[in-house]
Length: 116
Length: 113
Image 1 (cartoon, helix red, strand yellow):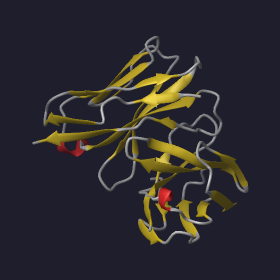
Image 2: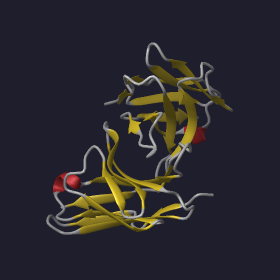
Image 3: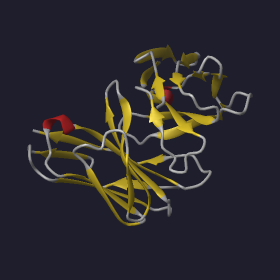
Image 4: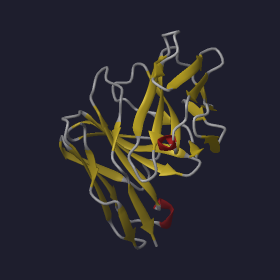
């Protein structure tokens, strides 16, 4: 079974600064997918960024980027130029590659507050 | 845009009551999921369905059942609600095959007294 650990229950950052959210996972699989999802207050969860384990290049989406360290089983999310709208719960998630059902294993979440 | 709609945002029920949580998606997705969200525990999978009338247990199926009679609708049933089922329930859907993104509803917060 896979496990996903987010060691920072809460974080805060000043607007316009950079913040990094940590995620580690445990798996015996070689091919898999990793995700960061964002859940704004009282709103639905949305996908922020995705990384395929067989790709060495770190994924980026505008201000969001990841640092994927496969050997260390680490998958951190960096948010640059933080904005007030980035305030949300962030969840790291794991999916096996050969997973027709698209089942995700989630971490416990990190609550991020962006301060003006 | 994909829309996943959960019928109730907030529910309050009494211990022993039967509870139905409804979820509808409008994008013809094969897969549908019910997750439970609790502070510090993240999201845990209760049940999922990859086709009409098909269902598979997730990590915490005890005390729950599901129904998928139509492709767009996936219902979560608590046969006899208990206080430890007080939680936020999230429905999600996704295309099958190589598509990996899940689309979530806004959640249903259930309180069992």
